[in-house]
Length: 393
Length: 128
Ligand SMILES: [Zn+2]
Ligand SMILES: [Zn+2]
Image (cartoon, rainbow over the protein chains, first blue to last red):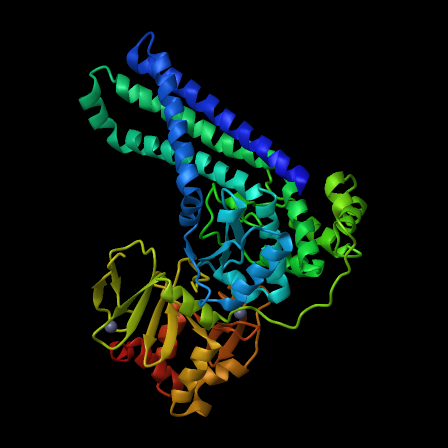
């Protein structure tokens, strides 16, 4: 939608400007501390250089970083032709220049998100739990929602935010660790009066306070409106609002086991896996129950039907006048008969093929499959008790 | 497909022995068995009718507030009786969850699927 694309461009600029201000001031303070009077400008330049590195990382490997942090692996067409088929269908309905690549996250909780700097490079990641639990109509609704985020450039903004904020979170984490575990060596090697230690302490403190705050502000700024808009588009693309409605119901009802979610990726999922309550000032997503009610209140499948249902249930407007004017009326199609795109056995086979399990053959005749990543170096054969080394790959 | 332990929320190890698959929690010793896995197991049992596991699957005494959720569909599991043993079964028929102690108890039963399960898990000798 035209209005949404423009607002995302504006938000991206604000985010980069805010990050520049934070890093520059942080660099200035650190420079004054470390180099004495007059060291501020040097630190300021250093802070801006950090932003330059962040932006370079975003420009070259934006999606790759987000996908990796969520544990997503590329899914070949042969792995799941039916899922690919749904994605291609929705990409055509959304008018994307080319269908997004498909990624799989090995997580029993059903969820999905999209990433990408540009619609041409976008990717959609779905969890294994989503594949086995949603029927075709429901999956179509979820993929339609994600494809709408791609078309609206929401994912562009979210990917930029994830990379910028992710590096701040990592930096603050590294500083905390170096302070807690490396404190003594810092003091000994850097300076006798502990200046080095103090700088790190101050920087870590500021970052530690700022990082979560930034994440919150960003979530707030991303607004819940984009979720309503993507829901409206999904209804339009699928011509079947009930598909997404019942998918949201299933996703919300599953207990949150956010294996793949972290502070950075959480807001990208179709239903925020870390959001405890439905409401609240900093909620990144509208209450799921409300999204479902609006979808179920639609008389047709068009944008105007969504707008009408939204106004009736919430009051106010959500879709921009220009988008509304250019959209036509759409009837709701009958439901399809198809079930989930994969059975649990099929999904397990795919996951094994993608290498998320390391299979160990024990001399006793049993094979033990260890989920990857595995936190320990050794595993005991469940059958005979023999201890095996887990080789990392 | 990760199966997560409904007790300790860690991912289960998958044990495959003679075409039978069991997901086992390293931490608490619990085991998840898919219905398909169970059927494979029961088909190997020498006396399926006298089998305690088989009987447990047809009995239905239930506990209303099932604390254990099915690792596959998240439905509250129903407690079913097998003699003096109570195990959790998915109401949707996805499989059964055996807690650590229950598994050992089951393995001590001499006949039927329990002995096949014991063979799969290799604890028959250890139990004496
Ligand atoms: Zn072994
Ligand atoms: Zn189940």
